[in-house]
Length: 338
View 1 (tube, one colour):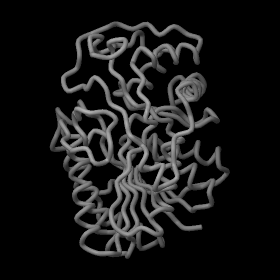
View 2 (view 1 turned 90 degrees about the horizontal axis):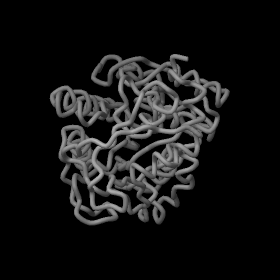
View 3 (view 1 turned 90 degrees about the vertical axis):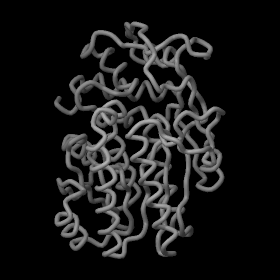
View 4 (view 1 turned 30 degrees about the vertical axis):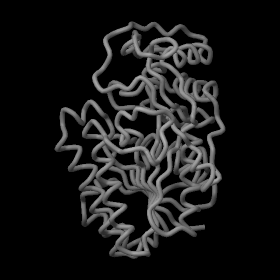
């Protein structure tokens, strides 16, 4: 099997990607600054798979470090997860987000080009769609991100589309995630956000395990069945298996290809709370507070292109997402610090 570079491989999604790659016979090298990642995640990857990854702690903007890494390895492809990812923080620190996410990607691409590595799977986001009026969201919907984080993803997509158009050597997949949740079924690997969680599921899990007192639900007056926002949640294991299919697809598909990765189903905040209460057998106390600006009432994917062209579709349901999250969080109340 081939040797693959995973940027951001010590993070939540990247570490689950390492498990899938190793279990399908690939050799894996990880580069990660550890700003959002953890060595504990890579230790868990080794325990789960019985195989180790080569690891370089470095920022992608470090040209010398990246050049030396590529000189030492014969990479077949790159899976690019590295980047800052908190929407609210991006509004407060836009320059930091543009510098880290866009500049880091440019250095990565320039290094790939110098070493004749032209296969890339990019971790994009449904935030590139902004506030679409119609559901479900297809890949042909207009892209109009409404925050700096989403704009960095959109800028990178545009760079990659231009790059693919510049030479037939490039084979690139842009994967637009909806809402990744869940954990590895072993209970050894899961989401361990730095500081206060920005996303719903890890916050619920930390309330359930006693790390946080109450959950805040932002708005209950949306035009949805129970008044709370509806989102498309996808199990992280389904998500990374979609990356494997995309990587295989690039073997026969030059150019730049865009795919939504979601289930095609929406669940409200209150449905998520109820499902997690079932999984954990614990009550999740919450307060209804004002809506956050920029939050859509409903957002869910049309994943049919991925099914048609990649032969991929999500397999794990909401109960599995909650069950696996709780298994991870209950065994590791303080995350990898445990």
